[in-house]
Image (cartoon, rainbow, N blue to C red):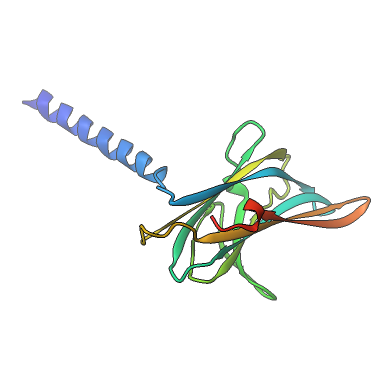
Length: 167
C-alpha cells in the first residue's frame, strides 16, 4: 500500500510540473508575422543599436500579444524586452517579457535593449496575437524603428512590418 501511495504521489507531482510547463508555452495564436533583420547591441550609452516595434490593435476587441526575438543561433532574447505605452510621457508596462494585453484601438511600443551587456546579435522576431473572439482573423498592424548611435553620429531607420498590412 505504501508503494502504491508513493507511486501515486510521484505521478501526481510529475503531472503538475509537466502541465505547468506545457501551459507556459501554449499561446495558441490566431495570427502572427515574422520580422526579419533584427540587429541589436547596447555595450554603452554612446554606442547602440536598438530595435523598437510599434504594435497597434485595429479592432474593437482587446487582444493578447506576444513578441519573441531570437538571435542568430535561435536563442530567445525576451529577457531584454520592455513594453511601453504613452507618447510624451512613456509608461513602462512590463519588462523581461514579450507578453502584453493590447486594448481595442491602442498602440504599444516594444523595445529590445540589452543595456550594459555583451549581447551583440542579428536575428528575427515573431509577433503573435490571440483574442477571445475566435472569428477574428486580423487584429494588428506594426512598424519597426532602428535607433543607432556611435562615434559617427545618431540615426533612425523606419520600416513597416508585414508591408504595413494587418495580420
